[in-house]
Length: 200
Image (cartoon, rainbow, N blue to C red):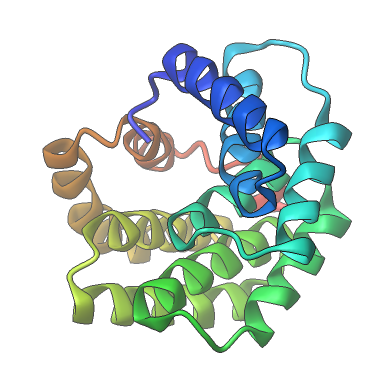
């Protein structure tokens, strides 16, 4: 989240090796997702199928840690597997356990996936829900991520003025918490650089 991708990759690789060595299925999804994202960001070769298979193994054979939910969607989108992104969104929709933080993570992830899939009404509903839940429980990093997705959605729908308020809410949180990864997304939106997939 702080865009320290080389350190993230080193720790993710180490955690993944440990999880595999002790057959800790639940511990696979987080490091696999972070390793995939870090490699994409660093421009390194990515064995997307391996990482996504490990993530799926964790999701179907165990229970991914709540805090790792946010990274799964980002990893799937980073390696460009739209079919898996769709399945993950559907899985998140049907899960009804884990409390309100998990609910906020899930809604934010669904919002981002639906945005990249060009399903803007679904993205808007999910983002609105993520913002409401994140505000209610004080989950600031989730609130920032959802607001940025909302701003990207406004840009994709060619109504960038609607995204201004979302960015104004997200930017101070990103700066205070040093969420450089999210801050970079926010700056791209402010400069009119919403990802092409979202504008399709």
